[in-house]
Length: 243
Image (cartoon, rainbow, N blue to C red; front, top):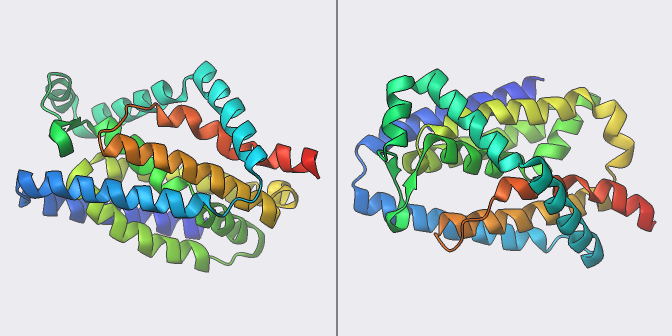
């Protein structure tokens, strides 16, 4: 679990530095920075989704995953978790002010609540091949190098995103810890199913979801992106059925 602990710690420290930066950041710059981050996120999603080789797996995964996500309503549950963490760490007063419309300003006249920052950054830090492969290596061989490298990337990203999205970025470390920690602890069980083609398709689906997240950040849509997340894991089953 050392790799995951370091990764979560890097996000917390980076997020804290980002909050310090945010205090001296003029609103005009913060708004433009949010647009820039949205465009960068869009680029990450587009470039990553090209790694997939089976369009049918992508389509079926997205369709079934979206249905499952809507039935479970993951977006609502994760937002509730974000609101719980907000009450826990920011205090009741901050939450009441947040509900009254004093959320942190963001791009395009949009307001970003702590819960929204939590959801957005959680997706960015958890979706991707490095999170899966690094956690597997950590659990199977005790090699944490991939997660250490990811920690450095997430540290820098946390500084930038916290300066715009606020304290929710720091709280996303808790979800990352559960997600990557679970893969690490279950590595010996799930490793046979996560072949290179399966990971490539999972990464493809995940990056399509990242494109949806980027559209939300740019104010082009209001997708419940978290409800799409179950689609990421369906290539594990679909690739085996299509072999």
